Image (cartoon, rainbow, N blue to C red; front, side):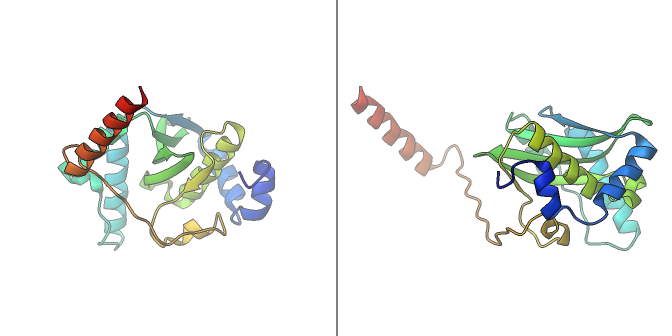
Length: 196
């Protein structure tokens, strides 16, 4: 929302060569961007695991996939049933397959990205950069949120797209059966009764 349109944004924050990468990928795959709130957990889980296997085979032994942990996968499945979750993916229209995806949650007009991966066969195209380019372009045309939050972590790509960053995050999760939540619900019911 700091920028009038995508053209103004790209003159200030577009990483170098990303347009060249996009043109090459477009020529080779005729890709298109898709946006969905459908539960794609099976499709994205396999892509995430394939990327992890590829990176480990090339020496990145610390790489793991959250989808190989049954409890984490179950949590993501449950999360993806929520209509606030939005997935963007690039589709290879020549091979009819997903190239790369990014999944996040929209909350308070902010898109919180929490998971992304790419098919290893597309690694040389810089598809992560192309996907962010297309997500931002699409959101300027059809706005669904006001800010893109790349999440915590010091990955260099996060600093290519913006001059704004915040190093501190805090997640507060209250279990449905917690005493604080019950007290809050009781307080809310009392306020509602008094308002009548």
